[in-house]
Length: 139
Image 1 (cartoon, helix red, strand yellow):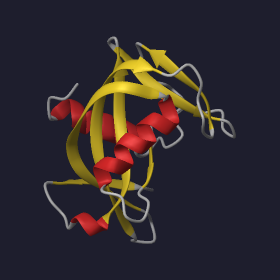
Image 2 (cartoon, helix red, strand yellow):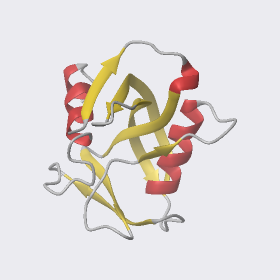
Image 3 (cartoon, rainbow, N blue to C red):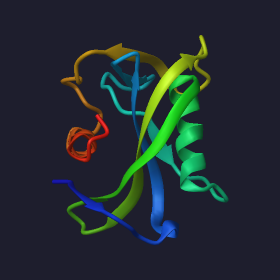
Image 4 (cartoon, rainbow, N blue to C red):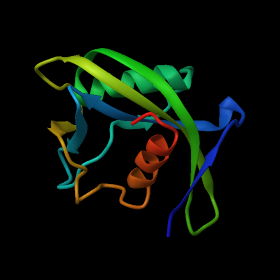
């Protein structure tokens, strides 16, 4: 079982991921990877030399084609696997006003929906992140 925890602060060097809960025109924005049948919130790994905010902006563009948006940090989270290994990421919220027509990544398509998906790629993690963003007043 995967366990999600939330933090106010950690050393920025520990932040390995950025996840961006995204809405556009009042609808959720979800990604469908080419190799999966499930849906996910945009996000991904931090690359060498990037700030975690740069990671969030890059992943948002790569995975959704977002070109005009407001993005803000929500909180720090960690994911702990059964092995005990804990990895940290930064959760963001973005409101997108403009998308490119074509995606240039491993994402097959984006879906704008009024509802949360029933078939999450990471069912132990993504609903927890959305719930925390709601609790903190971002959604």
